[in-house]
Image (cartoon, rainbow, N blue to C red; front, side):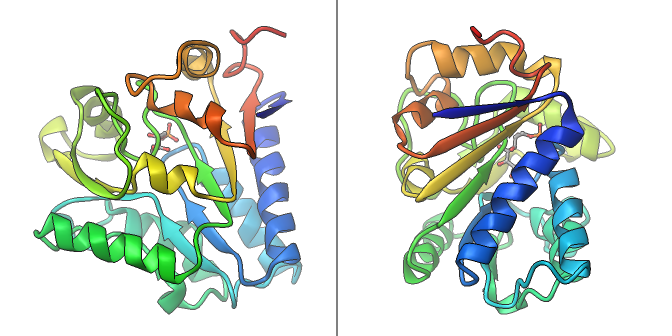
Length: 243
Ligand code: F6R
């Protein structure tokens, strides 16, 4: 596990964008595993800037998102599909057919999850997975629990996650209670993983995940068993880690 400590959010975003840029240049047909949330917003802006300057070509890139709320349509502003389109895809030359997000409107969870795993496997697996970490240690929507879920599944969101995501909705009641997420095994099968973390409010969970026991109670802790993980965090987020 490598740690890159940056001064601030901007530095974290630049460092992550540099790794994604390198990945796309080295392998123009890369499969990128993408995250939503607040953390990667600036990184996506930087990737769009690089595309506009002619430095990046997304035409052969495929993307596979980590998760999607259940019961929300793709044109709902809170859907992760909508987020990705607004924050990255529509500003690049990515082929919409190569962008993948679990379909939150299909009620049959088993069918959605099996199809999603099949898509990832048909693509040949994920070359570079981008991750954020929830305050409770979740990655994707793999919430703290008694087991590491292996492959994609339908998850009941924890109250902590519902509360954290309420900032994007009018009220806590509007936050969906369930989501589709790739599993821990799916994430761990990615060739490379970049974890982005920013802010003092993440410092405690960062310390727990990367220095405490590896346990499904802190899902991000499993990342220590992956052989190619780069954690990019600003000084505030990495502040409680030993030097
Ligand atoms: C998003 C996702 C989540 C977030 C995590 C951190 O697709 O899978 O695990 O990465 O909740 O969210 P932010 O970046 O908003 O702190």
